[in-house]
Length: 293
Length: 219
Image (cartoon, rainbow over all chains, first blue to last red; front, side):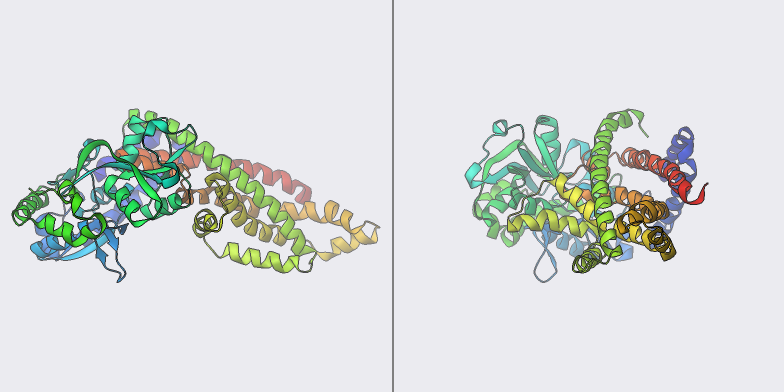
């Protein structure tokens, strides 16, 4: 993949003669750096990912999680990663018998992190979509999700058709909410942020009329913050959330699928829910959110 | 690289380029005005204002633009000052740039030997005339390379605007990668569009520099 990239890059460069000198220099340098990287990380790895054996051998697995999306993936008051996704990640580390190196990701760079081998697994509330499935391999799902829209109590948005021409809806770059609204409501003005924390602050500051995101997230936000209502609790299709691995990483994918099936036998994700999500959502959402195989 | 995807994305990048340039130039205009005023204050050693200018320079030169934008965009609304993202971008860029511009102008002003002022005054010119007709033209001519470097620096700094939801070039690229994962195409266009934006500035700068320095060096 690296090679075709360089080839394509160079062929493109012939057209833009002016760029040639600077960019080939660039391509060469990054190629070399990437080479060094792979040798340092895992000896003789396939294109950008590490197989199950290589991970076990190195003794550490890199798992991409959110650090600012409570209660799914966040850093708690002790500085430790916690949440529904992290609870599952801990178990993966345990069953693989390796240490876990958590890598904090943002919504928009989850695919990148897998494709460049920065992480082995993404466990960052990653909704399964067709577009994403072309770029990464999803394992079996462990959670359900739909989209939701939260708005302030004094101006609850109950239908996206009610929005005025100048009303802006806050979304986070790289989320399914963004893709859905771009595709189905191209006329709605979107105010995009690249991290959860910033979108949250902006919404609290009153920068947008509503915030569209995974319904789990907006419900949690409305429960935790006074003065907000989820006017649209379910928008678009019901989707699932699943771990993702680099495209073609068969060994790790198979292991993950077997692991999720085994965990289903012991109702692991119900236990996960009760441990991490019960405080936020109460028992009512348990059967709606949790997926066991 | 897929040509169809490039074609599909180019309009989005164009839009981002226009926004980046719009905010960029407004910010740079603001920074030039601030720079001139501040440099004049420092040059004439205006009491009180001189100290304020000094504090302003130190604060804005020693904090990253990202932090300044965060403060203007996320913290000010908490105390009741609501600012749109675009205004915030212009303000952030203008205030950061102002601090740099003051120092650049000042270095220009200080490079002019005092004998120039003394000669002009002895010829019967007033203080104002001396500054406007003798010192300033030479100072600006000396400052031009520094000012151009600042302009390019400021245009590049726009790449942190993504935090305040401005769809500049950088954020557009990141956003498209996040949605459709066409990384190579997106990053290629990103480099090309930054060059489209900045190469003319560099070339134009070279012309302006030659012009501005003609007065001083005759070449």
